[in-house]
Image 1 (tube, helix red, strand yellow):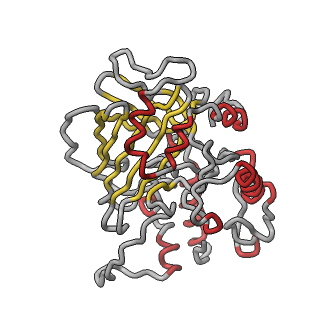
Image 2 (image 1 turned 120 degrees about the vertical axis):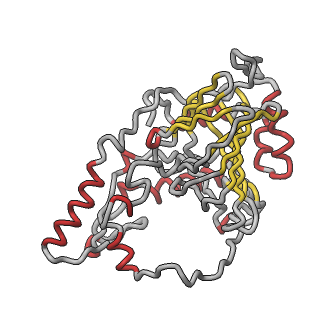
Length: 349
């Protein structure tokens, strides 16, 4: 969470003043052509386009990308790109109730948590969540804008690998307790669950700080305080893969375009290590940057898909997410497993 952040409803109220052209971003057919023109337009205070000291378009700042807009379009909104104000208010109220952890029953289980009789343990209460309380300002029904149905493309049907080791569910669960190397990058505090790349609105820590300096842009996510230092212009690729991939940036008019490949695996939002990611950042006004990205991975999806969500200015600074430095949870997971083994008990979920 960010110190000094104003109430979300106030932030969204300010967004009602965003130029009408921003509403057109939900229409796939015009996104690619409108974004550069939008950033070049003039904002309400007459300062657009914003520039850095070295003359580049300014996309820097501290932003939040929290929203309860669904990533994919729910079935009840099939064929609907946006909602009316009345429909949006009804959906927002329903989602705030559905996701409120304080309303979950820890005995019976709820929201994906198993009943306590089956070993389920309810995690944080509502105080710790920062998922947002409203849809995007244009009241879209999905963050996915291409394919036009707001849904991810069909997955590629791959033949079964006869050489791949097959584990029973019980064996797979038990293996997770063998070593820290068998835990996820999230458990190991190496990557955040919403930092990507690409970034994706989630339960909390939906904050990012963008720095610009001559020849570089740095994207610092609050989740696991992961920083991507990205060269702008021609630069040789690294000779090895990274969790966050190998990113290189260039300008297309007023839009900063970041292309990323050479993923090692383990980052949130990753489809496979073959993923090619194109992120686009365009300043719309002093308080808003459009964040759009396209994922292409022919080994996983039959077609590329594109997502658009706004970055909205918020007060800083970011809090340090000192997960790795104080990660006693991972120690506890493995120590608890060793204790169960000493007791002769089987590991369970």
